Image (cartoon, rainbow, N blue to C red; front, top):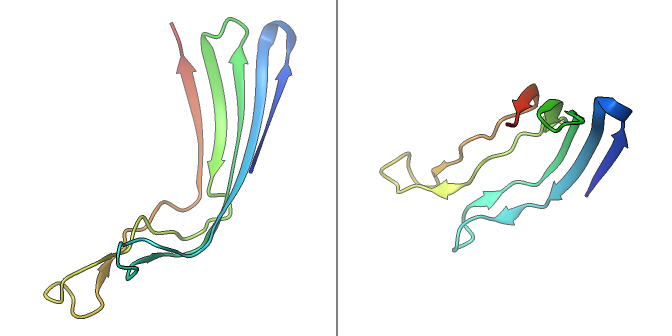
Amino acid sequence: MGLTYDQQLGELGTATARVSFTHRDKAAFTDNNVGFLQGADMLDASLTLATDNKHWRFSIYGRNLLNEVTIGGDTPLPAAFGGTGASLSPLNRGRVIGGEVAISF
């Protein structure tokens, strides 16, 4: 679920505020339902100023603001790689705060 709000700032340009919230239940990741993705609640937000001529865009953003621990997958491994029940579960990034400057020409 998300919300976007645009506000015209005269000759300065347009400000855009965005916020989104997503929820994921625990879900099977593999065809045989052995690997699972854990449930997660994710909150993202951003604020962007685009100049009136659309050449410049300045943004600040936050992703995973609730700092949820999530994995990119849960792949079962053969017993030779860690024993019975071993799996490869790479972690996704935690909270990310950043900024961006973009130019279009």
